[in-house]
Length: 192
Image (cartoon, rainbow, N blue to C red; front, top):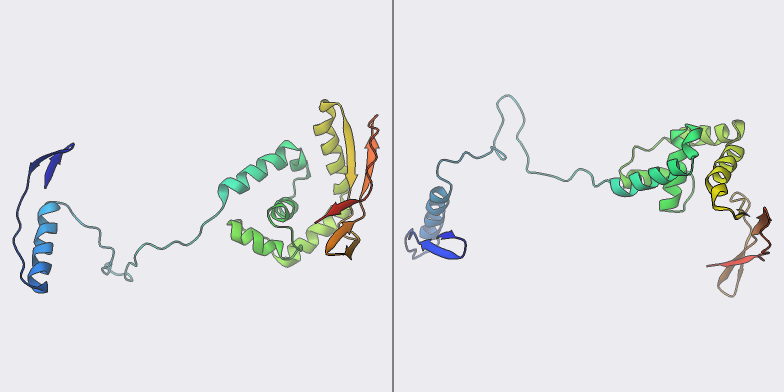
């Protein structure tokens, strides 16, 4: 069928089939008429001197939009001043899925980010202590938040966070420390 817009300009009859074999031949003839003069990529054929070309396959599905957005936020907060790629990957990976440090390697892999090895993760944690990342990150947070006027700090020590299970709820001891004129006091929060 030849169309221009919604108007049928002509119909070309290929033939009539009486069985499956004739139908297959007519379908092949119709394909040849439709694509006359067009070459075809050799996707299923052998390449000269090489191995056969397989059909298209999905090899990865990276979450690049999510990862790039997280990287921008990390930089906007001033955390790039640390210049530690592994630390950044650990922080952002654990935002995507809160998990153990070592399991963050799996999370990064699922995001399509080249993940560090386990030994690199542990070396990064040693670097964080040696180079005083906590103080540097605190200064970066202050520099980012100071222009807004009101500041407050919520302090979590994730390595020793105490959780108590009561009546299917999880209670976490949280210390909220008002700073620079903020007067709110917050008691331990219910998490869960």
